[in-house]
Image (cartoon, rainbow, N blue to C red; front, top):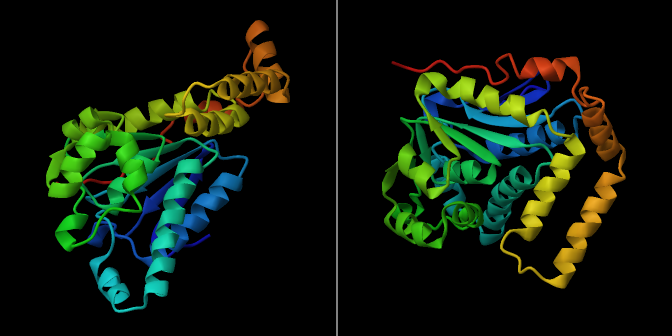
Length: 280
């Protein structure tokens, strides 16, 4: 499907969603948000897609919300602003709960809502040159929609500092805080992401979807008797499932499991996340 603000590619079982407003640092408006929701839902429902990469064309990953769009929304009613904010909140929740593993390909400028997109992904790989900022307070706003994902990623103490100051921080600091999973030299960003995609496609798709759900359920939850019972139930059901039986049989028989098709094996070797040209 053609989009105004995105380029969506599916190659070797990997879906790549490119934010495609490079001259504006890929800032998002209502159109991009709606298109991202549509694209991600389509990729989520596509059984041929094993993982999703979120990336930005041009010199930046995402500079947050489009200020012209935000100025326009400021003149509208509370109900209209609430509906608009809910659309972005829906997008973040969709990324967080997508059945497929999600990887953020991070470079350049990453501000406000852009940092929220990074935090909502399962894995984020950034180049050394990226610069991050949670800048909402400098506009008289707060990062309420991205807050649950950012605070979960970097912790309350760091969130207090960087949300209250709105100051810039480096990729190395983002890595130290946990906002990104890994940092690489710029010329190694795509190769490292492809290595991770090669690892991700080895897992069973149903198991990965349930693993994501289970992580969200157990993160920060007290270890109660009910949680122990639920964990045993998950294991018992999965071990007896078609995918679980196939995974165990393939290991014992020293062969590839059924979900590792030829095109998926190729994805581990070829560039699943096409390289974006960097401006010198």
